[in-house]
Amino acid sequence: MNELGESPREFEDTKTSKRRFKRTLKLGVLFALVLSLGFAGGLTVGAAGGSRVLSNLPLIGDGLNATPDPTLDFTEFWKVYNTLNAKFVPSNASTTLPTHEEKIWGAIQGLTESFGDPYTVFLPPEEAKMFQEEISGSFSGVGMEIGLNQDGVLTVIAPLKNTPAERAGIMAGDLILSIDGKSTEGMTTDAAVKLIRGPKGSSVSLTLLSGGKSIETSVVRDTIQVPTLDTSFNDETGIYTIALYEFTGTSVSLFNDALADFRTSGAKKLIIDLRGNPGGYLDAAVKISSFFLPRGEVVVTEDYKGKEQNIIHRSSGRGGVPEGTQIVILINQGSASASEIVAGALKDHGKATLIGTRSFGKGSVQELISVGQGALKVTVARWLTPSGKSISDGGLAPDINIERAPEDIAAGRDPQMDRAVEFLRSGR
Image 1 (cartoon, helix red, strand yellow):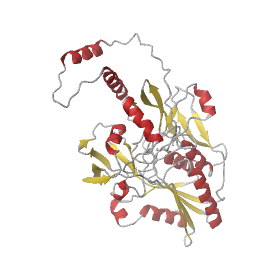
Image 2: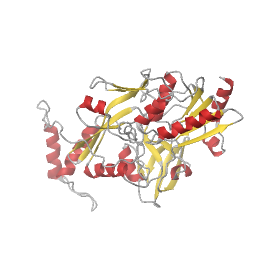
Image 3: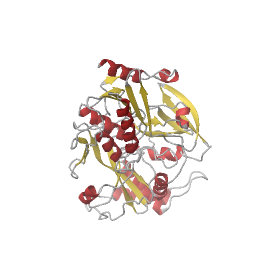
């Protein structure tokens, strides 16, 4: 969900590492890890959006500045700390007193939350260990990416193809109101992941707000096999379609094979379907963009707001797309992170027309830093398209806005794809 260099989650390349003086795990996206079999729904390490199996993933560690700030007054903190220790009485049998370490972790979590960024979170030791297991091993889930929308509400970014979530009728943009009866108000994605995950064959109950209606659904967890890419060619229209479902370590080679087949078909009209694609490796996004952009053109910029030197990712000019090819990219609210990088780059360089609905808007970069036995995920930068637009600022607006309503999906209609075909055939 990787967000590591060439495989979705990789450490920064040598050049970047030398520039930083610290080995940090870059998280291009912090979506819920609710998938399975090594698919961490959308967590990126040096990437733009989702993440995959990572062996021996170390936390950066620790070597952090622990010098107290003498200008800060912690009087009120110690008043509360000492009062709680002196007066607190458990109100029921299930309440347990926190250990000294748990109190410290809780204070750190409160400090982290005060920054008001849903992607900046502190993971106590147990959660940090779970995080490493999720992105390096096998686990079961329901097969969907989740994140927080612009209003901080837990939202389905995209159900993955042929997963329990998709079969249950869950759609991109659905709001998650409760999980197994627990309200998600103020809940972080990490907390939601812990509730949604579970053994294969077990069920999780979700209350969703979909299409303005509140619905209850129970989803049976399973091992998720995530497809990467599908292709099709319509002889009648002369249109070739590549549907990319996520940006993984194999996406670039698969996309290259699809382009070879596209050239063989003789077609000059191409649809790249990124709807419901929650992202993946940054490196995959840059390399796929490089099939379409000349060498040296900007694909995406990591903007550090002056705290570090910006990192500009440029096209390698891989080529492979016939001259004069007309390109449409389909996007929707489920298109996030790496998908937004590719769509934004091709749009800004005049290589593609975007059709569909506004994308999700996941455009921040996180670093994972060890703190003792815990871990801090902190937003350190934002993604900028070649024109300088921040992807986090409301996502990407399509050139042609076309909705696909739930009733369209139920009836097997696809007005967005129909409009893309119409555009390529008529030129408008």
